[in-house]
Image (cartoon, rainbow, N blue to C red; front, top):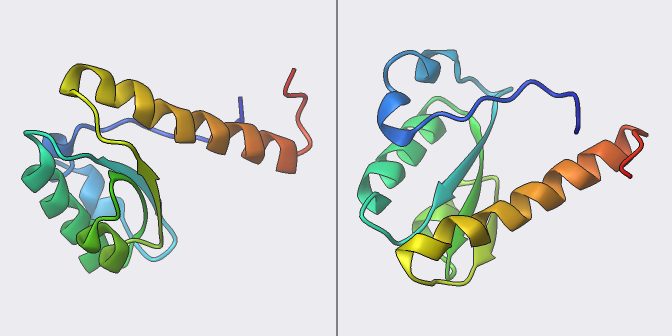
Length: 108
């Protein structure tokens, strides 16, 4: 636990309010996997970048769109859709772990 406020927002809901709060100081972590929502999520990534947000992208194979539009990207292997979210969780857990360590929190 990092004690940082964070919210999970589905790609389709981003335009209904949360996008208005994105600015140059906003960190946005996006999961951009090659699935049926790829185009919709890519559009959301463009919207965040257009508002000068700081997107961090978890994607399959080195993705040219993710590389050009994100502050940083993490590549995870491509797998079947039903397992893709399990692979995407791993970098998120590592991020939370390292943030907690940097904040001096007990991670045990």
